[in-house]
Amino acid sequence: MLKNVEISVVTSNENKFRELAELAKEYNIKLRWINLPKVEIQADSLEEIVRNSAIIAYNMIKSPLIMEDSGLFIEALNNFPGPYTNYVRRTIGLEGILKIMQGIENRNAYFMTAICYIDDKIVKVFTGKINGRISYSIRGDKGFGFDPIFIPEGEDRTFGEMNLEEKNKYSHRGKAFKEFVKFYLTYIS
Amino acid sequence: MLKNVEISVVTSNENKFRELAELAKEYNIKLRWINLPKVEIQADSLEEIVRNSAIIAYNMIKSPLIMEDSGLFIEALNNFPGPYTNYVRRTIGLEGILKIMQGIENRNAYFMTAICYIDDKIVKVFTGKINGRISYSIRGDKGFGFDPIFIPEGEDRTFGEMNLEEKNKYSHRGKAFKEFVKFYLTYIS
Image (cartoon, rainbow over all chains, first blue to last red):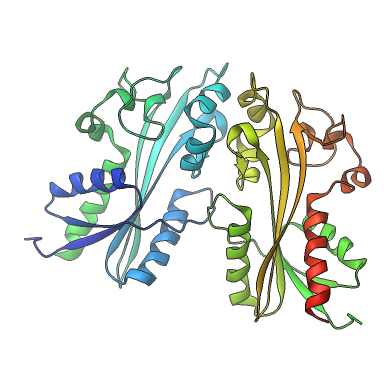
C-alpha cells in the first residue's frame, strides 16, 4: 500500500541512513539516501536545529524528506555535549568525557534524537529519548559516537557491546522514527 | 572624511559592541548597534560561521555591517572548544577544561576572533589571534569566559589576573578589527 511512497533522508552519515532504512522496512516505507552534509545552526535544542536544517534542505530538494539529529545529554554537565555531540566526539572524544566525569557520582544521561519531516504542506518534529548512564570506562567497539560509554536503563552493557538489533530495541533514533511513522501513516491515508 | 560612514554591528552582546565602538573611534568610523542575536551555523571554523551569519543578517538589514565571533582553541584537544566556546563555558566550565587537560603536557592554545564585513559588493573575513597556554589552575577573577585559565605568550599571569587595559594590549578582537580597518580605509577611499 505504500509502494510508491519514497522519503528522502539527507545525511552524510551512512550509518545513520542504514539504521533508519532498516527501521523503515518494517513499515514498508522506502527511504532514499541523499548524501549531503546538513546545514545546522547553533542552538541548545535539537528540535530547533533539525527544523532549520530540514527547511534549508527542502528549499534545495523540493520533495518530502526527513532529517535527523541526535545528541548525548549528561545531567551533571548541564546537558553537555548535547547538540554538539559530534564535534565533541571528534575533538576530546570518549576519553575527554570520561575525564570530565571523574569524581562525579551522578552518571545520569540520555540520548535523544529529533527527526524533522517536511513536505510542501507541513514541517513537524518528532523526538525519541533513551535514559541511561555514563560508564566508568570505554566498553565495546560496536555502534558509533558515544555508544561505548552509554549504558541504557535496565542494562549492564553499553551500546558499544550490543549488536545493531539489540541496540535498536532501545534506540532513541528508533523511538523518534516510530513517532514519525505513527503520524505519517495517518497523514498519508 | 569618514563623517558619513556608518557600519552596523549585529550582536546581542553589548560588551562586544562597546569594545568595537571604542576601537572604531580611533579611526573616525561610526558603528551602529543592532541588538539582535546572531544566527550561527555549526562549523569547525570561525571564519565560515561568521561569514554565514553576516550573509543572513545582510539579507535582513541591507546596509553595510560587521559581525564578530571569538573562540578558544586548544591544540592538544584538536582545537576544542573552538567555535563552541560559549556553550562549553556555560556547561562544563573552566573546571571541565582543566579536568580534560589533566596529564596533558602540551598546554598550547590560542584565542581567535573573526570579523566579517559585508555590503552589496563584498563579503570579507578578518582574523586576529593571540597565542598562549592553558594554566594548571583557575587564577584571577577579572575578564570573562575562559580568561582565568589563559596565559598569553610572554606573560606569567592569566587574562583573569589582568585589568582591561593590560588585557587589551593582547586583544585578538582588537587585532581582527585593525585588519578590517586597514582594508576598509583603502576600500572606501
